[in-house]
Image 1 (cartoon, one colour):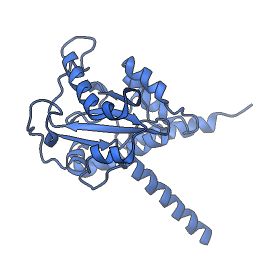
Image 2 (spheres, rainbow, N blue to C red; image 1 turned 45 degrees about the vertical axis):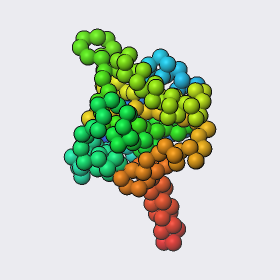
Image 3 (spheres, one colour; image 1 turned 60 degrees about the vertical axis):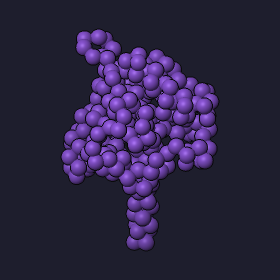
Length: 244
């Protein structure tokens, strides 16, 4: 009979470490942290289509190791910048404020930036996760309505028109998905943004729409850079141990 105690202890350690970092864990986060990457099932294009169509955005998840990196990164970033929003404005968007040139979201190029998502969800290979940032607020449903926090019908049409013009007419409707997280599950709430998932996009197309972040990065999000850094540090450690 297999002893599951060591696994349970490791799972508890992961959760405790995340809580120590000051990150507000949700039930979904805890469920993710107790998994190994091998146990996590990458979300396919069909999975994503169903989740977005049914507005089950809370079902979008990160690979467990990426979630752990994100929690650690969030802790360090809050200590240095005060808030994640402050980091995003300064280091990723290069915006000193959110004074919009045009009151309509996405209507002005100066008010809009498209970047690779720094911390994408755990999607299958070949799916690129982009974030479209805008200085202009996107109206959401207010009050006691069960859908409070979701976008209004008018906002949905405005976003749909933007995605059609910017992505779908170049890549085809079958290769583009978009969503805007409800206010309750947004990690960056003070800077408006929508998520766009694409597949089959050429480098030429991406170069034509992606903005350089304030740090000069275009196609790599911070999560990918953090993963590469961690892998390099682990490699260096193994080399040193081998030499010893």
